[in-house]
Image (cartoon, rainbow, N blue to C red; front, side, top):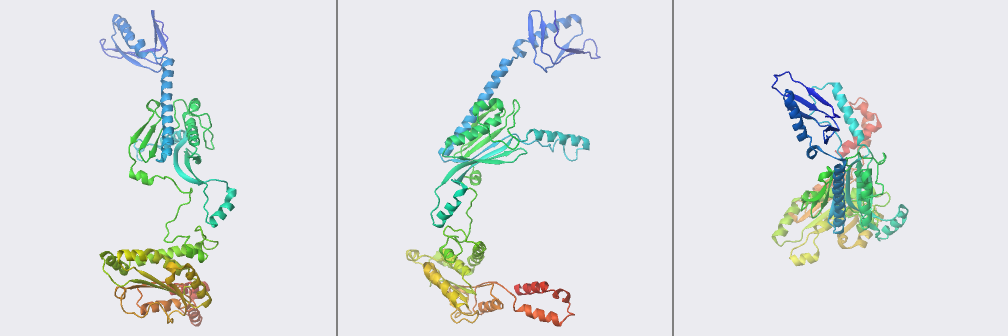
Length: 556
């Protein structure tokens, strides 16, 4: 006798009697036949083709049910599910242990570059499924956006991406700043610098955070990684990989539902290979070597050991700790600008960069490089520089040092190569005798390359002892010299006098920047006062407009 404990629905199709009848069996738990007990998984459905003849129906019923719903085919117990779940958890734990041990090994071998872990991606509307011109009405699109917002909200506070890189950090507390300043000023660098694994954790819809783990203490790196994986695997698995609480966002630790994983995959990039991690689905979890050698692009883009956290050395033409900068009171022994001299240091660097490009691109330097390569013997070529209105000589010292460091050949190399070296001579001109004596003393104290740097007293354009002027009318290659004239912020008409001096003496490079407009401003004032009907009278009647007009005319 059949003891039905399942729901069976019969659907008769209006077809000839010889056509089959559709038997649809839906969600159930168990059903009984004489001397047999069967179990059916919940949610299953079957379609059976049966004849309408009653005898055939009974015979077909017994044979088909005994075949389809046999214990061997559709019998499932909770014990088997638990066994599968334990096996999957073990695969995940083994993959995590291999991931952590690989990071520790690469750190010990100094081959580690960086690692990345990725959580579940943020949901988004598919453009293929819902294109902009798909004809979906506003209500349907609104429902889609609401569903998308709900799915995103479920991810709030969960891991989005975790990345780790190596950085060098100073040890100690913030209260040691005064001690560090004294050490840096005396030239003794602090030895308290250690290597850390800086881990940046990005969350879904939450604030990012970062942690620094000391590399020398491997337990700290291992514990930090275990905490992250502990939170990612869910509360049921925390005891398997670490009991400590993982770093969480401002939304707290987010529990993962059964079967979910807070970390989907990841990778470890080393100088010897790339290791790929997979945690979802758990049945395919594992860590494997995907590439034996790291791509050059990834190696170049990898942020290996960064020096002193966010402090990055700038690419400048002159070293900020150069002795002449210290003598002039621009920077300290460790290269940091003194109070109020940051803008002056930047000005010197930019000025040297601009003039250095002009010198590099000059025909004189190009011909000199060709001659030095061919080995032809000639008289020593010279770069001569005159700075009109040099002032205290910040730019004069900077340019002279740059030219000597880039074009001056040491004497031992000249003797070894049997080639004449290029010499640099620089001269600064100013009207203040006390200032000239001071900066000449600085050049004498520095010595070496600065022995060819001299400052003289005189007026612009009326100096008898100018560095160049005897061989005017010939080009730089014929006279075997490269003549450079500089006149920056020379007052009144001094800029005009400097330009005229350079033209008379056939200077090869002229670098000028006008300073003030004392010559033009009185003339414009008198003209605007005498001519009230001038076309620009409505503009020149205002002092601010007269000043700007004078500046524009002077610069032009």
